[in-house]
Length: 322
Image 1 (cartoon, rainbow, N blue to C red):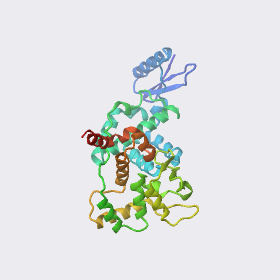
Image 2 (cartoon, helix red, strand yellow):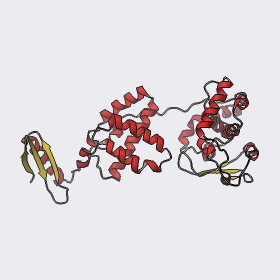
Image 3 (spheres, rainbow, N blue to C red):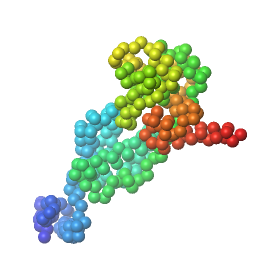
Image 4 (cartoon, one colour):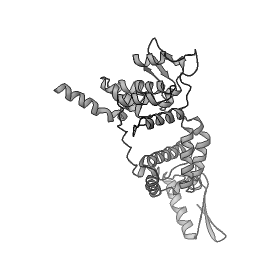
């Protein structure tokens, strides 16, 4: 039987029941306290009770801070995660977990989309969903009404850019780019590696005789070994080489800045360094490789990510049909 007591101007209901934690709630009226106690005890009897104590007392900001200190440091994208956490704490951190409603998140989705982009809003909501699932499964904070992100629509994922780069544009870039960055651009087009993967390449992971390069640290946290074209091998052979150490002693941001300057000087519009990866993958398909083979080289996590390139295959089939 619940104990109902008056505490100042409010009423406190406390339930002590074997196999359950002691639960205490405070209400404005005695009637509200009795009603809550009756419903809660009924749920316990029917084994439908879900303890929402921590969800009611824990702020989203507390979960964000715990993730920032315990989980983020082990992630390669730590800086990006911390930036996202800062924004979420400012916008939603004051909500307790139980009061973080789907309607609240839907409003945040619209606000974030207007201020930034659909992609930014989608990634924020995906992060919140993963955070709440972690709290529920590993941190002992039960979500009595489920994960609120599961009940709202996420902005559609952006279609990848389809910017191709011509040989003429590449030649113009080579004429205007720093000599130490030029081979990086060439390797990007030949291999489809990401900027960070190229700048982190080490000689000990390259076998020029077998024509392979091993990438131990990737964006998807899945190491991979990629084949090197004869052109890529020749580019690497032309570089000054140490027994160990990095292949390119250039920082990722320096590569981006140098590439942008070269494009500006060559009067090339709408081209970014990451577009070289798209160009490389497109060329792999044009050479006749299938999606499984391409993903093994490019490191795309799912074949779904390569669907944007299927039009290349369709064009090839059309040519074969005559």
